Length: 111
Length: 137
Image (tube, rainbow over all chains, first blue to last red; front, side, top):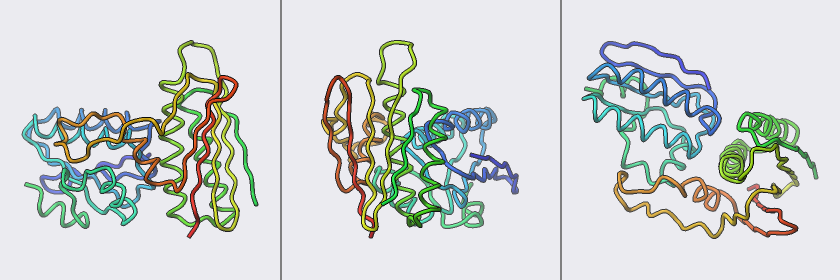
């Protein structure tokens, strides 16, 4: 997995590339923790280039959501492929994350 | 029918090699992207379970992974000498519970059962043997 950090106005975008699985989810967890050390962080995870995510990755997303809540920030996802969306649905997560169609829409809505 | 085999050490870094094996099947057999996605998720769930929870000692172990692809089906066989564990016996997670109350374990096996068309387990000679089937549609 590669993580590219892009600042867009008040929003921090993390563009993820590759797979988020049991061997690397910890790297993303560490980065999320570091970013939410700053209160009020608005974070958008862009899934456009993500190949797949496993339960270890979902665990990390739940950690991100929790960090955001406790630091007065926001945590959202965007650009899920249909296949990815199916997996979120299968895991019962669709209702639990703010998910936007694309990056622009995410940046516009994150406040 | 194309069959690829791999013998893994019980280290999480070895999963990279499994990923490589699936990519090879994608390239050589033209596996559809949806099937590749499902296989990658399921193999990560099952193998990381074995590596993280399957052993009670610190000695190296081998995990056998076999992937067979025919026109209509992908078959997976995973064999390990870890503690007896039947993934089919694990309870289904209650996805209607609020997130904060949901136990985080069980999600991976839920994906395995949902994404595969058939999952069979047997314990033989102190080894776990798991057979998975995924129809190619």
